[in-house]
Image 1 (tube, helix red, strand yellow):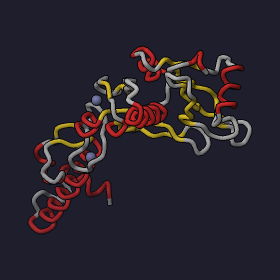
Image 2 (cartoon, helix red, strand yellow):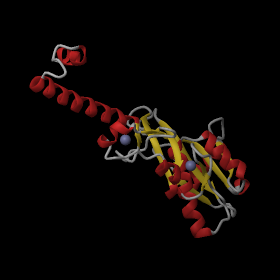
Image 3 (cartoon, rainbow, N blue to C red):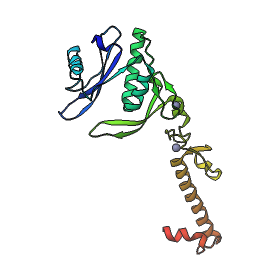
Image 4 (cartoon, helix red, strand yellow):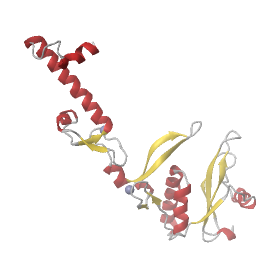
Amino acid sequence: MNNHKNNLIQYRGGGYDGCFWEWNYFFVDNKGAFHDVYSSGRAGADTIEKAQEVLDTANDHVYKYDVTTEAAWTEINQESAKPNIQLLIAWFNDYDTMQESGIEEFALCTICDEKIRCASDIVLEDYRGCGGIAMTADTLICSECYTGWLCPVCSEFAGEGEIKEVPEHLQSYTQLCEDACKYCIEQAETEYEQTEHQDKLWSALTTGIPDLFSREMSWFWHTT
Ligand SMILES: [Zn+2]
Ligand SMILES: [Zn+2]
């Protein structure tokens, strides 16, 4: 292990049913000691012997990162799935607390590109399936960007630039919020239209204004 000091090793682990694999990681610290960062399934290297095997059979599917360098973390951010980045930051956060290793791990926010040092400041969004029961996330953001793009009406994360001004006549349908996500604005639009139609219908039936057969009331004949 001594040849691999300060290296994070990424390899193909998993293998629950013989055909499915996922990225696993182990770390060789500055004294050459082995740490299992994340191992899963049959192919996971959870012992130093298995880790040695991974290194000995090193092929195209084994990646090494010198985690004491900034370049390594930049590469990890470019190459890894977002949930794996979060997992690695969390592991090195804990490791630093115990070891004062001086390793400066960081994740990069998809929106503002700022470095995120603490795993607890990472928010994953845009979850999607990636085969079988496995899930991954396409967006990794810092907590500021997350709260900055939360819809004030439904409290859901809307995405960068996806909070829009609510037209004034709709604000009574968005709890008087002046900004909202597009779904909340659409919803307000629908509610506004329904209320307006009801008022007009009532007026048409009781006062004759507008005329029930006028163009203004054509929606009534089309929807009923
Ligand atoms: Zn950010
Ligand atoms: Zn909303």
